[in-house]
Image (tube, rainbow, N blue to C red; front, side, top):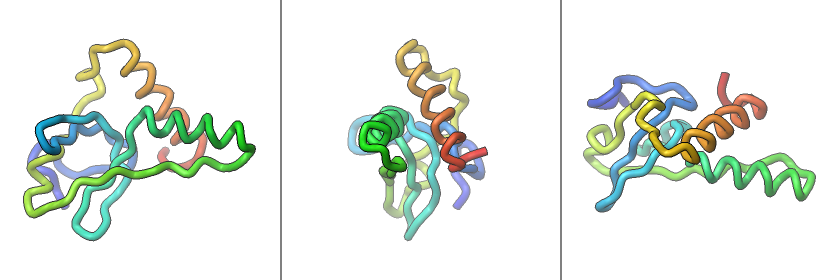
Length: 105
């Protein structure tokens, strides 16, 4: 599936996702059954910290968006769209975790 805004996707690409009447920032996780799947940076960090406390490997949950117009509701963006310092820190930490877990290069 090719997005209308941003083209093709690779694991870890930053996305803006429109759903309901809101918009969310995420990291591309893959495709599945007509969906675009993504991780949220806060979710990645939470699962990593939780796994470390339990001494296990993190299990990153994927959110997804589906429907007949999915390619119009997701845009590949540049991470510079983040202007809140906390969001920038969470994004950078999430990318680092995904690389350490060999989920992205």
